[in-house]
Image (cartoon, rainbow, N blue to C red; front, side, top):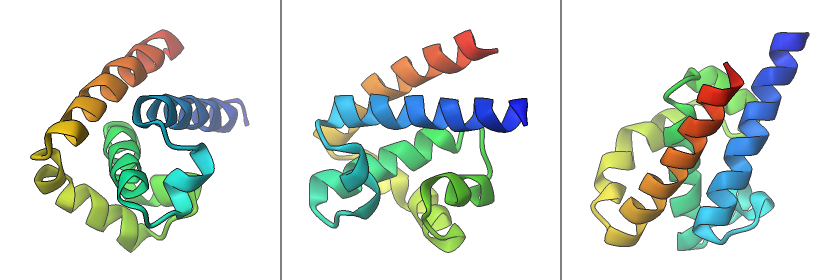
Length: 103
């Protein structure tokens, strides 16, 4: 149970970081189809993918496993956009610091 709480806390912190870096609300990252929200969702799933499986990401986010897999597979093409790349680098750096400190 302690491990599960740690996973949920790290997910929540990562979601907050992506929300701040992309200037999109946490709720909209998961549900909205607006471009900035989709970009944030791709960033979130990509960062979480460094530590979690597609199934775990799906469970944490409420997205389907095929959706998380599609996002991970298509993320490189989205990264070619300058603003997405900048937001990703900033969020990834902050999230990695949280994960390092959480160990």
